[in-house]
Length: 466
Ligand SMILES: Nc1ncnc2c1ncn2[C@@H]1O[C@H](COP(=O)(O)OP(=O)(O)O)[C@@H](O)[C@H]1O
Ligand SMILES: [Mg+2]
Image 1 (cartoon, rainbow, N blue to C red):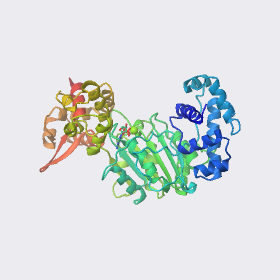
Image 2: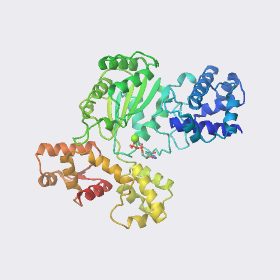
Image 3: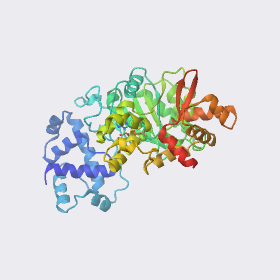
Image 4: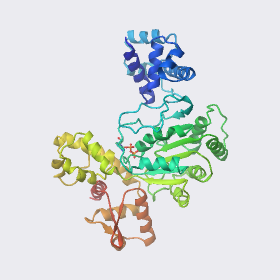
């Protein structure tokens, strides 16, 4: 058994439970422990202080002890690993099943490994422990290949947060437009400016109290802190913490606390108090920042966006030209046809990845052959995504989107009002709501605004109407 096997074994084990691979520093530390090195030697090799190396080692060994349900320390690490190896336990799935380790959760994750294509970090934090923020990125996606491009929103986000001191930033866009990817890639760019960074997904629709508790415990760095029962008191503690330390909070999948069947941005019953959290963070002076990723902006946020440079909204629509890199990555052919494919799929990186798979499977990568078939093919992977968006719409929005989808040409406001049933106010609201959801495109045409629906969505809406 060599050190590489030990690292792979440990990495598999930790990944199976936390979804995170070992960070470079953790690998260095483990290698040192396996080789029986002292903390001073490990610190020299890693470029970190002795105290930090000791801290990382102790956390990692605690994680392993919990996963393997036995006490693993620096001195017995090598013999324990050998024992597992010799007993043929090296398949991590066996360990997960045998150990029944369902309740384990590590306290802190470390900066992820940076792949070649990720943006360069502004300042290297690798050799300065003082600049390293406390991170909890357990809920965050892995950093994957990310194509940046001139004038990309990543640059805008960095400016808003670091120069304009934006306190509340909402990133909206349909599923797959890259909200999580951009927020994840933003972290290494700005992390040296923050003391603490936490990423939480609201995919399970946690009540506000649960979210506040998690945020307060981590951001105050007091896991055992006494949390008052009253929500207002919890909010006060959080705001105080955001004043004392510069914190970056990312709440992902915020659409999960918003309602279906209504116009965009209404909270689900029982979740309205999230609005108070967002309002306080947006309006009260502090140096921290909250990023919300959502399919649509919570409606109250729009009321305090105007005249407040500390509250920003970014609507992602697609990658534009940078999407060609995704198609290149997938090995597609007929490059001259790529712009057409990108337009059909609205530059949405997820949709393009899915159609690229289809084109590779059915047409050996030949884009022109795929495009010779009409209409746009909705795969089994893409259809449920579109369905989720469609099902969230109110009845009047469904009517409006069906009407616009039935037209071959963009529809002007006048045409739309003439053809649609319903009061003017309701129709205005429906269009506005579809716009906030990123499900309608507005084009300025001579003296009038005209609307279209992204082709893939149009195809889905027609299919539902048949
Ligand atoms: N700029 C980009 N370059 C390369 N891939 C991207 C980019 N933006 C998003 N992706 C990829 O597209 C997919 C969808 O992105 P994701 O961030 O999950 O979307 P969202 O959070 O908006 O649903 C992911 O596989 C992601 O890695
Ligand atoms: Mg996401």
